[in-house]
Image 1 (cartoon, rainbow, N blue to C red):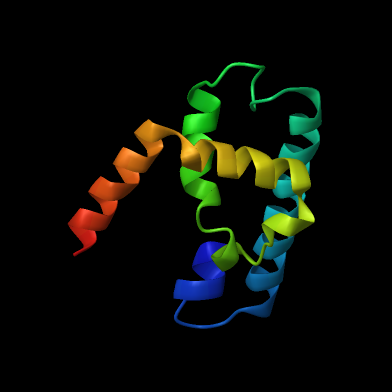
Image 2 (cartoon, rainbow, N blue to C red):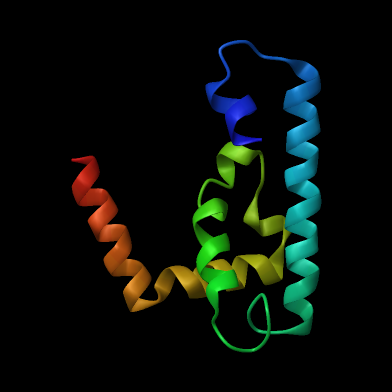
Length: 97
């Protein structure tokens, strides 16, 4: 969704809608999964969380609002608050300067 909503040189309605809708579906799947466990794969932080968080950082560009997914929002904020994630985000910010 991100590519077709932000970077595609030409706005193709089908692609824009198709991938925005798919992102919406995936966000719902993740939110429902988080009803079952604290993290994505189980109750322990895992590679599933590490791999998913960076993709979700562009939620606005994917046409999503975290307030629509309360469990996902809580998970996202918890991952973002982790000290190692904060250090990684600082490295990213430094490289973008």
